[in-house]
Structure formats: structure tokens, C-alpha cells
Image 1 (cartoon, helix red, strand yellow):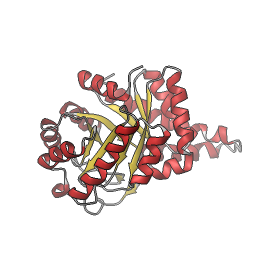
Image 2 (cartoon, helix red, strand yellow):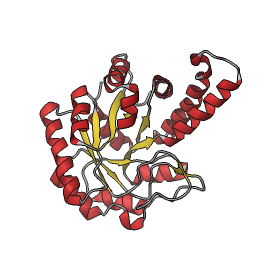
Image 3 (cartoon, helix red, strand yellow):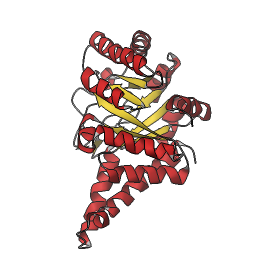
Image 4 (cartoon, one colour):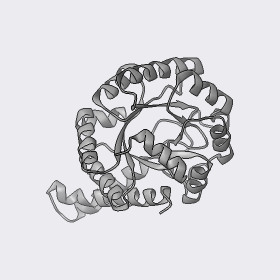
Length: 282
């Protein structure tokens, strides 16, 4: 089976994007696996620091590797890792990729911290991908009233700085700020800066990752993928779908968790299926 690095080459050739879905429990894992299986496309499971503390880092790595052994092209990313220690733990546990998120630091500090993780990953396994983040998109995967503090067109990723950052760190993937945000604004998310995506992609040789995919329109996704986005993160949409599904499940009066949670799984699966179908032009 192809590695994640090889699937990114495949995605570039096909001009599609690989879907990345965050989970925190086995129900989320089940929803992502079932949605990807139905479409027979590669998929990435994401677990942030909080999510992997809840589900268990070793446990979720084992789940992903077992599913992959059965023939499903599924990979695991240690999403938004804020310290060298936590990033090393994720790499040692056997993740396929890790993002070291130091976007709120100075460019110099971000570069130094990110390069440290790149160097560690290279010593451990050349196939582990390291992702860096540059620019401000906020940190919360919640339903928001307003734009997160510090997020504006002025804090979007500068193409020249991106090129310097990639060159000096040696990262495999870059997550830029291009009008995207973490979470979903109730009145509607801002539009993506497609020209900024194109400008960044024009000066880089590494794939671009779009964080904060929840709340972005289908039409914008299509254009963003054409502009050079190769991985798209979805989290808040899954959380909303899960919660609403469980609410419906509880109305049945069932007390068996696998029965009332099944509605939540089904709602998450719909999100995964529809997003993967769009991202893969199916």
C-alpha cells in the first residue's frame, strides 16, 4: 500500500484533496472508516492533544494500523501539537504525520521549534511527515459568534515568509492562513483568499493543508483544491453532527450506548462521505 507521502503525490496528480477528520472516540473512528470505505479513497484520522489524551494515543494508532492492514488507505495525524515533548511522544507512538503548531510565536521561534521536530522525525522514520503552520487562524473548534481574535487579512500567510519557513525547517507540509479559521461562525465563515493560496503554492514544493474546513462552501473547496490545497481538515462539522445525532438517539428512550450513539455515528458518516466525495471529485 502507498504511504501517505505517496498518496499526496497521487492527490497532486489527480488534482484532488485528501480528507482529514478529527475524532476523539471509537464512534468517530467508525464513522470515518465507513465513509471512506464506501468511496474507496484515502483518508486521514486527526487527533489533537486533547483528543488523543481522551481516546489514548497508542490506542488510536493501533486502530488505524489495524484498519490499514485490512486494506483501507487510512493514516493518522497528531494534529496541533504545541510542544516538542508531545510531538516526540506522537512520533514515537508511530503516527504517520505530526503538526507542530507554533504559529502564535515569532517566525524565528516557529522556525526553530518546527525544525527541531523535523530533525527528530528524520532520525526516527523517514516516512513520518512533519507539518508546520504559518499565519493566524484561531484555535477553537467551536461554534463562534465572531471572528477569532488576531485573525485578519493582515495575519494571513505571506508567500515569501512561507518559502523561507519551508526552506529553513525542511517540513513536508504547510498549513497556511488563507481566510480559513478554526471553528464555525454562526453567521457564516469568511471567504477563502484563493489568490493567496495560488501565490503560496507557486513558491513552494510541499503540499498545502487547509485547516478549519468546517463552514466552507462546496464551491470554495473546489476552487481551493484547484489552487493547490491537498489535505482538508474537518472537525467542528463532525462535532455538531455527532451531538445532534445523539440527541435524536436519546429521544428513542434507549439506554444501551451502542444504540443511542448509533444516530451520532450515522450523522458523522454523512459528513465524512459527502466531504470525501467532494474532495475527490466523485
